[in-house]
Image (tube, rainbow over all chains, first blue to last red):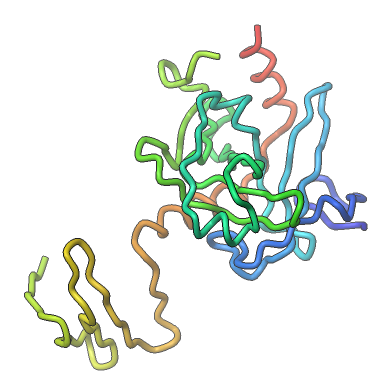
Length: 148
Length: 76
Protein backbone atom coordinates (compact mmCIF):
# COMPACT_ATOMS: atom_id res chain seq x y z
CA UNK A 1 0.00 0.00 0.00
CA UNK A 2 1.00 3.64 -0.45
CA UNK A 3 1.23 5.75 2.68
CA UNK A 4 2.13 9.35 3.45
CA UNK A 5 5.16 9.41 5.76
CA UNK A 6 6.40 12.18 7.99
CA UNK A 7 9.93 12.17 6.63
CA UNK A 8 9.92 10.65 3.16
CA UNK A 9 6.70 11.72 1.46
CA UNK A 10 4.57 9.02 -0.16
CA UNK A 11 6.14 5.60 -0.13
CA UNK A 12 5.01 2.07 -0.81
CA UNK A 13 5.06 -0.32 2.14
CA UNK A 14 4.36 -4.01 2.44
CA UNK A 15 0.89 -4.85 3.76
CA UNK A 16 2.58 -7.59 5.78
CA UNK A 17 4.56 -4.97 7.71
CA UNK A 18 1.44 -3.32 9.10
CA UNK A 19 0.76 -4.08 12.75
CA UNK A 20 -2.50 -3.70 14.61
CA UNK A 21 -2.12 -1.71 17.83
CA UNK A 22 -5.51 -2.19 19.51
CA UNK A 23 -4.69 0.51 22.06
CA UNK A 24 -2.48 2.72 19.90
CA UNK A 25 0.67 3.93 21.63
CA UNK A 26 0.88 6.33 24.55
CA UNK A 27 -0.10 9.82 23.47
CA UNK A 28 -1.47 8.48 20.16
CA UNK A 29 -4.22 6.18 21.35
CA UNK A 30 -6.34 6.60 18.22
CA UNK A 31 -3.71 5.50 15.72
CA UNK A 32 -4.24 1.76 15.59
CA UNK A 33 -2.38 0.73 12.42
CA UNK A 34 1.35 1.28 12.33
CA UNK A 35 3.74 0.11 9.67
CA UNK A 36 7.37 -0.81 10.21
CA UNK A 37 9.51 0.20 7.25
CA UNK A 38 13.17 0.53 6.49
CA UNK A 39 14.83 3.61 5.03
CA UNK A 40 18.39 2.83 4.03
CA UNK A 41 20.79 5.71 4.13
CA UNK A 42 24.46 5.31 3.33
CA UNK A 43 24.05 1.51 3.60
CA UNK A 44 22.66 1.79 7.10
CA UNK A 45 19.09 0.51 7.44
CA UNK A 46 17.03 2.82 9.63
CA UNK A 47 13.79 1.48 10.98
CA UNK A 48 10.69 3.61 11.24
CA UNK A 49 7.35 2.88 12.82
CA UNK A 50 4.73 5.11 11.30
CA UNK A 51 0.94 5.40 11.33
CA UNK A 52 -0.59 4.40 8.00
CA UNK A 53 -3.43 6.92 8.46
CA UNK A 54 -1.51 10.00 9.50
CA UNK A 55 2.02 11.38 9.33
CA UNK A 56 2.11 11.18 13.12
CA UNK A 57 3.12 9.29 15.06
CA UNK A 58 6.35 8.46 13.35
CA UNK A 59 9.12 6.93 15.41
CA UNK A 60 12.69 6.18 14.54
CA UNK A 61 13.27 2.84 16.27
CA UNK A 62 16.27 0.64 16.95
CA UNK A 63 16.67 -2.99 17.73
CA UNK A 64 17.98 -3.44 21.28
CA UNK A 65 20.87 -5.64 20.11
CA UNK A 66 22.37 -2.64 18.32
CA UNK A 67 21.98 -0.08 21.08
CA UNK A 68 21.39 -1.88 24.37
CA UNK A 69 22.87 -5.36 24.04
CA UNK A 70 22.04 -6.46 27.58
CA UNK A 71 18.33 -5.88 26.95
CA UNK A 72 16.34 -8.53 28.79
CA UNK A 73 12.70 -7.47 28.91
CA UNK A 74 10.70 -8.31 32.01
CA UNK A 75 7.26 -8.14 30.42
CA UNK A 76 3.94 -8.47 32.24
CA UNK A 77 1.74 -11.47 31.46
CA UNK A 78 -1.14 -9.15 30.52
CA UNK A 79 0.99 -7.71 27.73
CA UNK A 80 1.83 -11.18 26.43
CA UNK A 81 -1.86 -12.09 26.38
CA UNK A 82 -2.74 -8.86 24.55
CA UNK A 83 -0.12 -9.66 21.93
CA UNK A 84 -1.17 -13.29 21.60
CA UNK A 85 2.28 -14.47 22.67
CA UNK A 86 3.29 -17.05 25.24
CA UNK A 87 6.76 -15.70 26.03
CA UNK A 88 8.92 -12.63 25.45
CA UNK A 89 10.94 -14.73 22.99
CA UNK A 90 7.97 -14.71 20.59
CA UNK A 91 8.18 -10.94 20.30
CA UNK A 92 10.32 -8.38 18.53
CA UNK A 93 11.17 -5.39 20.68
CA UNK A 94 12.02 -1.97 19.29
CA UNK A 95 13.32 1.03 21.19
CA UNK A 96 11.90 4.44 20.33
CA UNK A 97 14.60 7.03 19.66
CA UNK A 98 14.30 10.66 20.62
CA UNK A 99 16.67 12.97 18.78
CA UNK A 100 15.04 16.21 19.85
CA UNK A 101 18.34 17.63 21.00
CA UNK A 102 21.30 16.60 18.85
CA UNK A 103 22.08 13.19 17.35
CA UNK A 104 24.80 12.68 19.97
CA UNK A 105 22.24 13.41 22.67
CA UNK A 106 19.82 10.88 21.20
CA UNK A 107 17.94 8.97 23.84
CA UNK A 108 16.18 5.65 23.65
CA UNK A 109 13.11 4.59 25.56
CA UNK A 110 14.29 1.30 27.04
CA UNK A 111 11.58 1.26 29.71
CA UNK A 112 8.65 1.29 27.29
CA UNK A 113 9.61 -0.45 24.06
CA UNK A 114 7.33 -1.36 21.19
CA UNK A 115 6.61 -5.08 21.23
CA UNK A 116 5.58 -6.73 17.96
CA UNK A 117 4.25 -10.21 17.38
CA UNK A 118 4.91 -11.05 13.76
CA UNK A 119 2.62 -14.13 13.88
CA UNK A 120 -0.49 -12.29 15.10
CA UNK A 121 0.52 -8.92 13.58
CA UNK A 122 -0.28 -7.28 16.87
CA UNK A 123 1.75 -4.50 18.40
CA UNK A 124 1.75 -2.80 21.76
CA UNK A 125 3.86 -0.33 23.67
CA UNK A 126 4.68 -2.14 26.89
CA UNK A 127 5.96 -0.89 30.23
CA UNK A 128 8.72 -3.23 31.34
CA UNK A 129 9.12 -4.18 34.98
CA UNK A 130 12.93 -3.89 34.82
CA UNK A 131 13.55 -1.31 37.56
CA UNK A 132 16.75 0.15 36.08
CA UNK A 133 15.46 0.71 32.57
CA UNK A 134 15.13 4.36 31.61
CA UNK A 135 12.70 6.31 29.44
CA UNK A 136 15.67 8.32 28.22
CA UNK A 137 18.75 6.13 28.01
CA UNK A 138 21.53 7.93 26.12
CA UNK A 139 23.72 5.43 24.28
CA UNK A 140 26.17 8.03 23.04
CA UNK A 141 26.53 10.18 26.12
CA UNK A 142 30.01 10.04 27.61
CA UNK A 143 30.30 7.32 30.21
CA UNK A 144 26.72 6.17 29.85
CA UNK A 145 26.79 3.88 26.86
CA UNK A 146 27.15 0.18 27.34
CA UNK A 147 30.29 -1.25 25.89
CA UNK A 148 29.43 -3.38 22.89
CA UNK B 1 0.72 18.83 50.05
CA UNK B 2 -2.63 18.42 51.71
CA UNK B 3 -2.78 15.05 53.45
CA UNK B 4 -6.14 13.51 54.33
CA UNK B 5 -6.80 10.05 55.80
CA UNK B 6 -9.76 8.15 54.39
CA UNK B 7 -11.15 4.66 54.92
CA UNK B 8 -12.61 2.33 52.33
CA UNK B 9 -16.05 3.59 51.37
CA UNK B 10 -15.16 7.21 52.11
CA UNK B 11 -14.48 9.87 49.53
CA UNK B 12 -13.44 13.44 48.97
CA UNK B 13 -14.45 16.14 46.55
CA UNK B 14 -12.23 18.46 44.50
CA UNK B 15 -13.96 21.60 43.24
CA UNK B 16 -17.61 21.02 42.55
CA UNK B 17 -17.53 18.04 40.24
CA UNK B 18 -14.56 15.76 40.91
CA UNK B 19 -15.12 13.00 43.44
CA UNK B 20 -12.38 10.63 44.55
CA UNK B 21 -13.61 7.54 46.40
CA UNK B 22 -11.53 4.97 48.21
CA UNK B 23 -13.15 1.69 47.19
CA UNK B 24 -10.84 -0.82 48.80
CA UNK B 25 -7.68 -0.79 50.88
CA UNK B 26 -5.39 -3.80 50.56
CA UNK B 27 -2.03 -4.52 52.14
CA UNK B 28 -0.03 -2.73 49.44
CA UNK B 29 -2.63 -1.30 47.10
CA UNK B 30 -5.63 1.00 47.25
CA UNK B 31 -8.44 0.89 44.72
CA UNK B 32 -9.71 4.35 43.87
CA UNK B 33 -12.85 5.40 42.03
CA UNK B 34 -12.86 8.69 40.14
CA UNK B 35 -15.86 10.70 39.01
CA UNK B 36 -14.93 13.69 36.90
CA UNK B 37 -16.25 15.56 33.85
CA UNK B 38 -15.34 13.90 30.58
CA UNK B 39 -13.01 16.73 29.56
CA UNK B 40 -10.78 16.24 32.60
CA UNK B 41 -7.99 13.88 31.58
CA UNK B 42 -7.10 11.30 34.20
CA UNK B 43 -3.81 9.48 33.71
CA UNK B 44 -1.66 7.37 36.02
CA UNK B 45 1.21 9.69 36.92
CA UNK B 46 3.90 7.33 35.63
CA UNK B 47 2.20 7.46 32.22
CA UNK B 48 2.54 11.24 31.94
CA UNK B 49 6.29 10.86 31.38
CA UNK B 50 5.80 8.10 28.82
CA UNK B 51 3.26 10.16 26.87
CA UNK B 52 5.57 13.18 26.89
CA UNK B 53 8.52 11.09 25.73
CA UNK B 54 6.45 9.62 22.89
CA UNK B 55 5.08 12.94 21.72
CA UNK B 56 8.55 14.45 21.71
CA UNK B 57 10.06 11.45 19.91
CA UNK B 58 7.29 11.37 17.30
CA UNK B 59 7.54 14.97 16.24
CA UNK B 60 11.21 15.59 15.70
CA UNK B 61 12.74 14.35 12.52
CA UNK B 62 16.06 12.61 12.85
CA UNK B 63 18.43 13.50 10.06
CA UNK B 64 19.57 10.14 8.67
CA UNK B 65 22.75 11.76 7.41
CA UNK B 66 23.87 12.90 10.86
CA UNK B 67 22.75 9.62 12.42
CA UNK B 68 24.63 7.56 9.87
CA UNK B 69 27.77 9.53 10.58
CA UNK B 70 27.36 8.99 14.30
CA UNK B 71 26.69 5.26 13.96
CA UNK B 72 29.70 4.81 11.71
CA UNK B 73 31.89 6.64 14.22
CA UNK B 74 30.59 4.38 17.00
CA UNK B 75 31.42 1.21 15.13
CA UNK B 76 35.02 2.20 14.55
